[in-house]
Length: 624
Image (cartoon, rainbow, N blue to C red; front, side, top):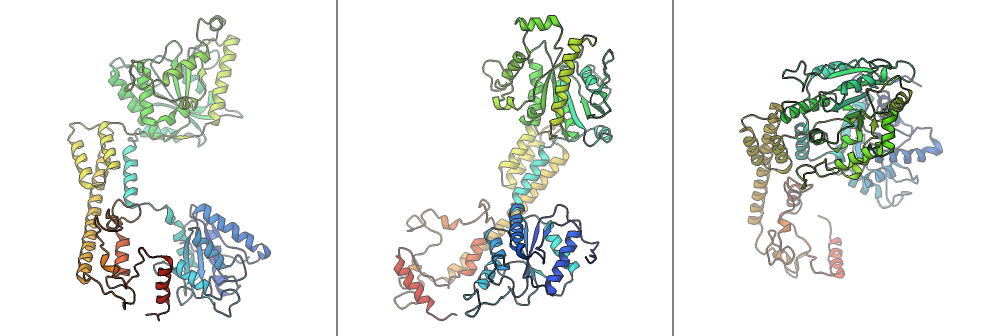
């Protein structure tokens, strides 16, 4: 194989769209040029397809397979337009059939022009073996209208052509392009939804974590044993030792917090470094139930949410609860807060770990006798409370999280542990080893969960609602003014977000000015046409088209007595709320193609024979 010289200016093709070359393969100079282009692109990792010249009888199979790939991947047909491109031949896989398939299936087509006349004009006519009626030329005019943009490759080398194709394959698919207004709205909403990413110290610690580490976040109330539990996972609380895992957290226990960075450990599961080791990252969080009241708890929870947000993704959220208590109001507030911030998807990655679940013989006998709840009974009661209505909807004072049974079924298995178990007792030790082994197995199988904190403050919700539900710049501006009047804005209403909303107001204002200018232009065009159009256009028995005077009955504005358009639907063919034509492009095109001097056949209330007679008469007349 000859060495391929690749231009260093050609960007890497990783992530580009699939492109398939469609051409008349004849082995001549043009084919050789585009095979060099193909090699250029392949050498830079572009997913381009071209049937090999030696494919032989498998040529059709490759063509069919490649066309299927274009459909599946929103790819691009790269049409090498020589003068005889798309000529009809006996082959079921000719360039004509390829172009016909692409056009019929909505595949994006990029014409690569090499012929002097445009579009290509392949041979046809009475003496042509396959195309006696000019089918190819008619179809080329349909697939390549005057508005179709092409790449003029005449006189260009393979490097230039490859660069043009590379640029096209890096552009988004035509069918994927969104309305600019909707794109702007979505970008702004994404920014507003995100909580502030804080704590660079968290990210700094994560730099030392292996890329395949499983990330665990432990939350729970004060005194449930979070630090000791983390010590078991970390391996610092070993069998036969009483040493506890020391957390750096002081939040929630004193008036002055010693640190604003969570205790985050990069380690292996239970400290094992041999075969089968499982790298993990553990984030211990401050306990709730601050002695200074629920407001301080809320502050701590917001800080935890921001920490979690800063690590971008996690695998497991461990909710550590005490076996001796039910879901208290304090715990319910914690769960409600995190569910509102992270959404119900959090339950797919949440494991309820019940601590202080003793495995000594006396306690296990009491469970068997019904004096204490079993694991199953505890889990069922916990799930039942989670399915109670949320506080704002509860009527009898019994509140939960408003989960459905399906939501609860998405939860991970409960784990029943005792961080204070007697390590010398074989029964208790075996039970704990079994629980931790089950937990490790669950963790290994969990995919990552990309965490993004959702906005919750009333002020930010108000702005988001306005962005989502209003279209006018003035309406959004008024909401922004109202919000900024608040004496102390909440933390999630940042200067960056306010600036982004201001820019959206400006963008909408400019868009509305353009819309107004277009509407004024359309109105001026309408007035001009009205002046040029007589009240009763020429008609009569000897008129070549309008024998019945039907044109005088047409009222483009419609009225209640209009025979067909009583609602004025025809006067509203486009506009800001139209799904496809927001700028009135159709109206301008119709005005251009059908001016007031254009005669028409009035086919309203006519039968098939009458319409056919009129068309036949027109087709017998010489062309203009």
